[in-house]
Length: 359
Image 1: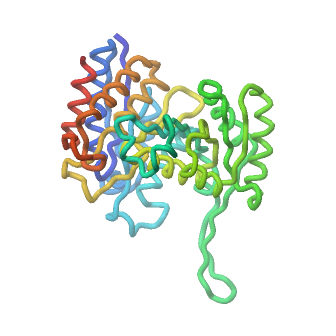
Image 2: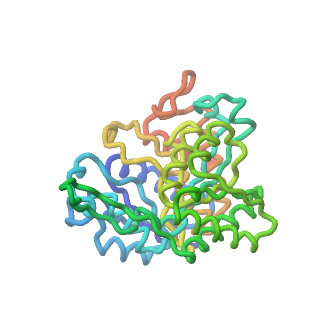
């Protein structure tokens, strides 16, 4: 029997609850499809600060480097908001992505038929379906550029953050996006701000050059402000969106709300190897931690992405996605509840997915 080593980074807030349910589902998938999951826990974020004095202990990096893949819950919360920027929980998340060489973030925005009514957009705007893949560069750009504070000549305090991309960084993320587009509808939209930013002008020129390697993929460009508008005006025009770290962070959250709930959307962070970091795109939601009302489905769908992209278990991944779709026909957590459905807790939702997965 195949055996996979997976590190669980439960993190903060609702993280332990949602990761716990995703681990249950992975174990059930292993029972059905003939593989064994071996889990090892490690600290990241606020819980790591409390236990080890740093948001990213070296032990966590070492465990993740040895594993076949990593599943993350969420990090952060108001408890740590007063810490300096380089000591906050989110710094651990940026650090583990960088330490593992994960430069490509895949964020699918999909509307389940059962949740069409949860979208804030009218049905005629959504069209027949919504299936967008946002490919976000993950380890460059303004989040990793030079930053600091200084006092100006007039005595005023100022702060700065630097956006910088190199040609190799742009080339490698562009190839990920073009390869993804090849397997889908062969349409790629590259998003930048080339009318203002020099880094975006380099981005656009490099993407156009890489496009010559993929003549069967249709490439177009949009400024980020126009893309944000088009996502709510006509989301069906998009298939694969390629963009930078900060723009991707914003646009993928917008796309998630179009799909009905940020609590439903998974993500995968990948590098040059097969191992990756998988996580829901929502935050740690400390206000509902421990109440049983967290939605574990984004984390469960992240686990399905892990099976597909890192562990080469596509049948198990498809079965989990199918089980989620079946469960949604009758059951909802509070964030996606609609009249006529049955309201369930986080643990109950995980159990229902396991139940349908076993059928």
